[in-house]
Length: 414
Image (tube, rainbow, N blue to C red):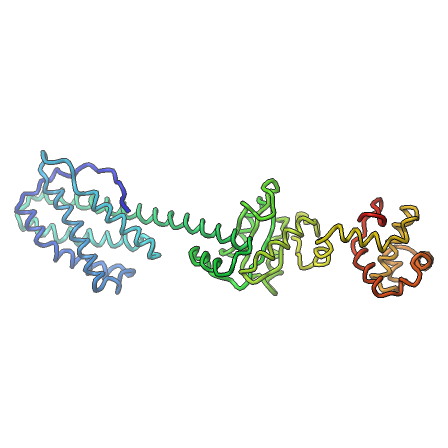
């Protein structure tokens, strides 16, 4: 990667004579060797790593960097204003990028620069003093050397920061794509490849959470760091609904209760835990529960789809449920609506409480004798069908969610 750096003010004030410059260049190999030795001894992160070919590479880089500095110092005041500084800055930038790719912070590299500057100055000052350079010139030489090291350090910091930003953007894109593929039910092989590119550890299970977009940030603050999120291009969800999705790793079995507690107050709908590559089925169930309004999430408890499986099943085919209800309640169709609803409600409780009159009366807040009277009416209307297991099954399903008063209980709709 080639990076354009602004050319700093050329440090040409020193004007080293050829003899001094030659003396310093002759000592560059030894200086580079001593510099790397000092770095490995004083910077723990590089201890044991700068060996063999890597050490030779770093020593060569040190020679080039210091050689560039000497070229700058040896320019005459009226010489060519162009300098070889940009290649040295690009090399320092690349060094910082490499540290980021290796997963290291800038602390070690900056420490290495400080050690290198100290060793370089000690060796160079000794050589220049022996060469008869005036004390004032030696002092200025030190100032320019440390300014040069600062330039290299700044270039490395920029390379490190840019690499991290680039990696962060690339990883975020890969995570977003992985989320979309998981929700779409992509093949496991493709999902594994995308997870590897995103550096996302594969969990055992994923649990999908559907919630308003406003709840994403507080939810992520409570959840573990590898949770995925998306609010864009959700399958089967219109943008106007302003919903978002979270995919939470390994919240199965006993940990589900913990997840539900963490989502309190966020109006969330929680799908089932599924093997991570089958997260699409958890997503589909959570969206379906949201559509059906199961549990009607308020300001506190989230909707746990595992507690609403019957409602989810009955909501799969609303027209079929309406037709079934119309069939089983057909004997009530000729009655006044209020009477039909009252008898349908009694029939529902009778089915659910397995004919126990006291329990039915308690559920309806009526006297047991009232239940006996109503069931007498129902037996007149249904006859022996109330003793038929098939009819009981149909009644149980059809009346599981009886419409409230005012809505039809029979004759063409739920």
